[in-house]
Amino acid sequence: MNILLAEDEKDLSRALVAVLEHKGYKVTAVYDGEAAVEAAKSGAFDCMVLDIMMPKMDGVTALKVMRDSGDTTPVIFLTAKAEMDDKVTGLDAGADDYLTKPFVMAELLARIRSLTRRSGEYKPKQLSFGSVTLDVSGQELISENSVRLAGMEANLMEFLMMNPNKSFTTEEIYSHVWKDATEGLDVVWIYISYLRNKLKSIVADVEINGDKDGSFILQSIR
Image (spheres, rainbow, N blue to C red):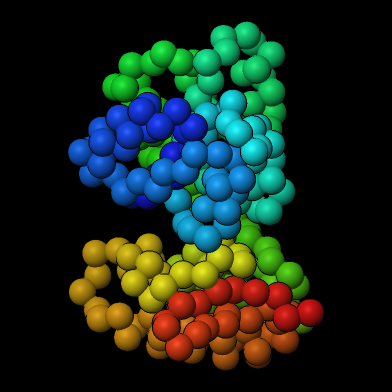
């Protein structure tokens, strides 16, 4: 499970990373709001933990940028401020939870477990990007016309549409979509090919681009 941690107090950040990694999480640590936005653009995270008071861009502004880009990753705010206005501002910006410093590490871990559990249980009914809509429950891809998707095709398309304009390696896609499956990495290329053909068949204005290094990205072509 991947966590983005944005905390400018480096001693605290190192301590949080040590505990989270000990608990089995993979952690990407950054130290300012701009770096948090850039990390969110380039990776898929299961949860983000953002300090509110950070250099270059505060946590509230960073989260607004992320939410405006379509990022729906669960977010916990960390703040040294206890005033209700700060908590309300954070929640209004799109945060799912908050903790006031100083906090007990066990509570942060509990909040992360709660948010990621709820996120895993929730599946949006529809996802849209460009002219394309994915009916998640019906496994139907719709633009100028529509086409049905097989199970893993739908899972892969859902992942890409939840993370548009983000580049992922074959290994990253495999770990997020196929999880504990035993197929080799070649299965990613096969299903990317299936989806490319189906996007063309519905005259979509988005496409899945790739490079020689085996990374793929869902992008608009108009």
